[in-house]
Length: 75
Image 1 (spheres, rainbow, N blue to C red):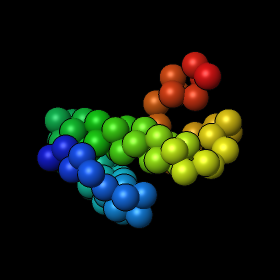
Image 2 (tube, helix red, strand yellow; image 1 turned 180 degrees about the vertical axis):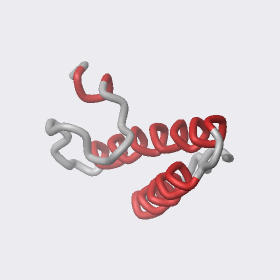
Image 3 (cartoon, rainbow, N blue to C red; image 1 turned 90 degrees about the vertical axis):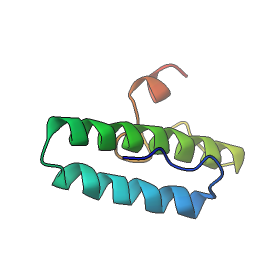
Image 4 (tube, one colour; image 1 turned 120 degrees about the vertical axis):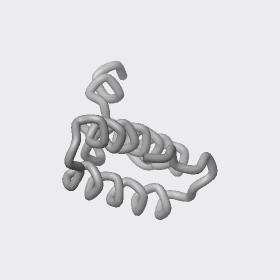
């Protein structure tokens, strides 16, 4: 699993996140699942950051599946 490109708008991030979730659910090995899981977490954090930068209320729990718990507990 390749890391997502650095410059993506919110729609591209959401799309890539969904693709990574599908890949994670279809992965046949732990290694592949872990790679997709890492991508899911990275994309989830980037989605939260983009929403925050756009003025969205990010005080709620996780926005998307895969967001690390620490990302919203440490606020």
